[in-house]
Length: 227
Image (cartoon, rainbow, N blue to C red; front, side, top):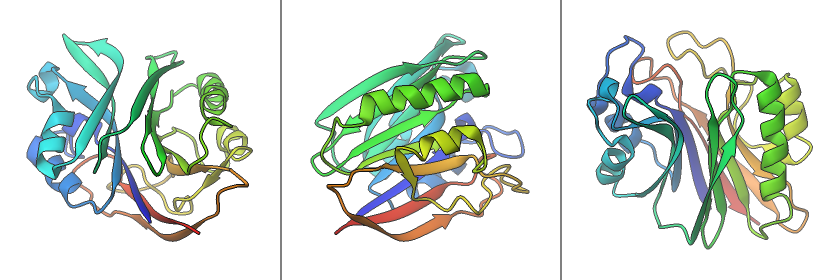
């Protein structure tokens, strides 16, 4: 059984616009998952008190962390992170296009799964190119359950999700909105599983949180069993 979660933390800025690392840390520590994908993670930026956020979450959850920088900003780094109960056996950081800011794909291989975290561009052309990169990096590369989690900045009826579904199944609940947290109007956060005819899995449960304070996104989760 694999428990997965994804959360865009807005660098610790809540819906009230106030930076509160304790508030978002408390939320992350409450998530019952083997893998937690985080987007909009700061390391050394003034807006987040020059903190290494991924390390703080790692220490609080007693989970291993991997951080992937998307851009240098304000004397620090900004990107995505993955918390995991065990250390990955291999890690890759793949640049993704972003017209407004560069993006990144973090690929972590474990004994029982491959788990990826990303945050797609605000520009559709960049997102479509990112789908192609995901497929090139993941399709046919691993003979184990392979997941991609993150804020894809795409609604379920978008061209981007249509293209992704050629190679991936959406295992999170895309019928429930995830953004903005205080009055959700759209779903843009996903947990995807790479299609593989040699691997049978079953989705046992999905969940979308209802916290209106910790971030501008709701965290999502899914529980998947290999059968």
